[in-house]
Structures are given as structure tokens and as C-alpha cells.
Image (cartoon, rainbow, N blue to C red):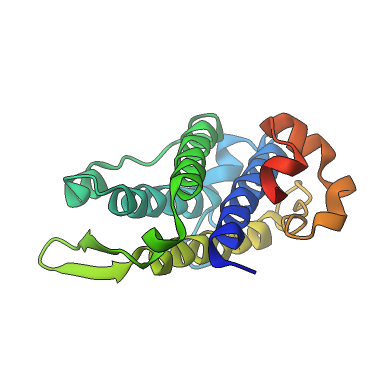
Length: 184
């Protein structure tokens, strides 16, 4: 299996998982979203905003945007899921569009991550893999925190196997995707 098709599937799996998670959380009150919980970040809202802010930073690096540090510092957390979900969806789509546009050789290009007082240089493929892993890591924390609410934590890992198409029909339709879009 080539790396680029795998990464393309991963960024779509990322979008589908966020879609499912946000849909499941839609009934939570603002108070539930901001309630203190046990995890790395102390609330669902703080964890979801962390995912969004980090996505914006790394997507700026992956696109070669100027002012990454200024973008990071300008981030204002979303107060509600109605505000956060579309913002995350836009980031997820930007991630998908980027990875879909790349050639295999571009995964080896070195990109700059402005850290304010220094510039970190990494291969684009490593940054993409890191960002996918970051999302999975913190989405798992949100998933665990949901167990302390009235919301049943949704299934987030059904995507990478083409034979599981029957388990994602409604989500694929909601996202406007076909199996061919994802698996060729």
C-alpha cells in the first residue's frame, strides 16, 4: 500500500469521526459542554477547542501560510458546539483538500513550523501523520468524557476497512461522499 492513498483515507476517517462525535453531542447543553471532567483538558469544550486550534496551526504550516504564530495567538475558543462543529468541519475539509492535492513526492518536502522563537522543520508526510494522530488522541479523550454524560459515546473507528461500508452509509450520505471517493 502506498502512503499517500493511506493518508487520504486517514484524513477522511478523521472528518467522519468528527462528524459522528459532534452529531452525538448535539443534545448536550452548554453547561454539559463546559462542565468539569477528568481528562487532560478539564472539559469537553476545552478538549474540542484544543483539537481545533492545533488543527488550524498545523494546517497553516502544511499550506505554507504566513503568520502561523499570529494565527495561533488570535484563536478564540468556541463557546458552543453550534459554533465549534462547523469550524472543525471547515478545518477537516481543508485537511482533506490539501492531502487530495498532493503528489507522493510532496510528502518528502520539508516544511516550516514557526514556533515563535524558532522554526521547526519537518517532512510534510510526518506532519500530516502527526496531525491525524493528534486528532485521534484527543477525540478519544472526548469519547471517554462522554461516558459521564447522558450521551452515548458514538462509534468512531469504523472507516478504514472497505468491507465495513454498511456501517457508514448514513454518515457518508451526510458528508456527500461515495465509497469510490474514499477507496478509489
